[in-house]
Image (cartoon, rainbow, N blue to C red):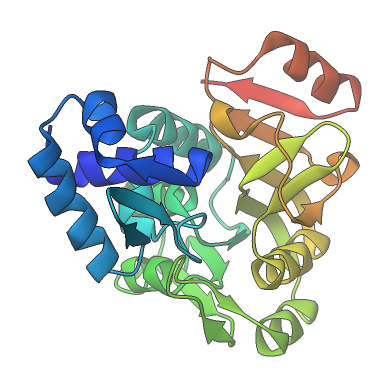
Length: 261
């Protein structure tokens, strides 16, 4: 198992349990205690966990892992979700994209779509984003007009948040908002852990003709701290085939089109 994958699994387990002993982690990951100690020391150096005598505890940021550690989770599913979501958008549309691993994959799908690259002179697509990593990837594509909101960058997600971001979004009109979220609950709606991100994402959803939520099945049936939008505001949910059937029925019963890929 590669170090990156071990670190991701270690942080996932720590996020679920709050505390992890070296021996417990070694058994869980199938590696030696010495390897776990080295991994914990490295993650503590990056301030993603706090070392204790014999193990580690959750640090203040471990619940919301930096993008580079989230990327390996459900990678195949996220790629399929991103391709399906990007396929919903026709050339000429104005699309809002927030930050996250799945929306970053959506941006890459847009960047490599042949029908956009072969479009007549001028922008084949306008992307409005508050994610600086997505803006960086799309800015070099001449057929994509990239609009970036202002705001303060969050290091964990690369998203710009705060009044500058919401003020810019309030003056725009979007055909689609494609949103990555931390949780989708049939009663509470789509939500994220950080209230600042939720505020910017909510502004994006409010300005869109259609709201497309991209979320793998592990995020379904869960709640997070700050709501982005209600279920009634979601036009399409794109998720993977492991989505619980009962949950899909509840969402479709409320008018959400659910695509499982």
